[in-house]
Image (cartoon, rainbow, N blue to C red; front, side):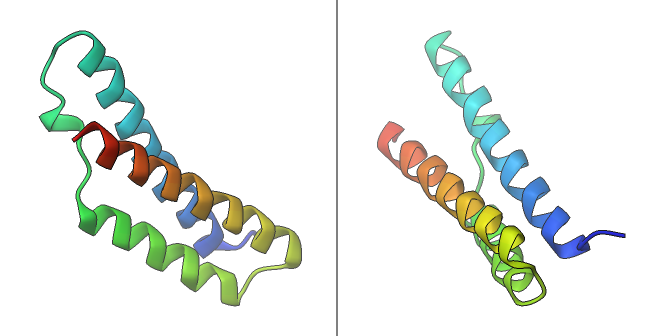
Length: 83
């Protein structure tokens, strides 16, 4: 059995990145991206899950969590740049 919190962190970031990519695609198509925006609360939840997962993770998982945090930061930054 794997680290459940680690899996939740991966899923949370994946969901947010997916929403951001859908929003960017729709923006190119001149369609409202309002439905695909994620809230600051979504980002906070993902960051909290990543933080929680760090405590019970192996070194390899911590490295992957750091990469997930970076991906989340980039997604958040690109969303802010669009607004």
